[in-house]
Length: 45
Image (cartoon, rainbow, N blue to C red; front, side, top):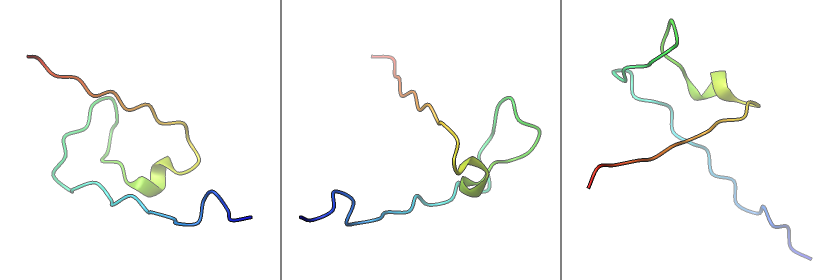
């Protein structure tokens, strides 16, 4: 039986000019490894 996770896709690192909130320094993908991350997308129509 084939594995459900055959392809592994790595997320790209964040651009260096991103403005962060509630953190004293810029974050990298490596800083978030193994942590639960909540992404919220919203817009005004």
